[in-house]
Image (tube, rainbow, N blue to C red; front, side, top):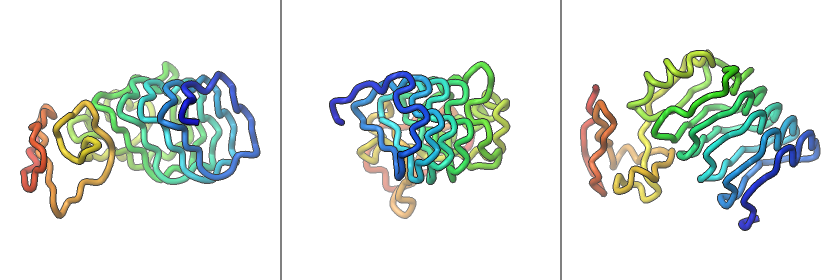
Length: 193
């Protein structure tokens, strides 16, 4: 599966025999439209590949059994119409991008997902999400720290979602979200913009 680069258009549409989690390998850079449409028997987590850039039209629509957190990877710049429509069992959504992904023209990428689900986005983008994604009706945006795979700020182009070890590390975030490229920060102050 590590050699797999693309999941084709409608590849697994209406497959009802899938159970457990769907872990798409990081080698995959493209998942076609409707690829997992109405695969409602999944009952585990959804793990998206790190380097995917577009979550296409209805790619996971009707996959109502996914549980846990939905993590939108750092390179995603578009989320298509009905990409996650009727995926109603996620407990939170973490969006790891450093800009707000564009949304489908019909404003229905997340249809039927609770308006009060926690949506974790970078601190500096909370108001951008609230305004640019207002048509989705989400009301529970939360600012969150994001860090690179090494757990430091040495390469902000490789940010990932995650929990910072708050007892050991606080984060400097200025109003414009410029971050010092200082590794191994042991103490800092959160600046409000």
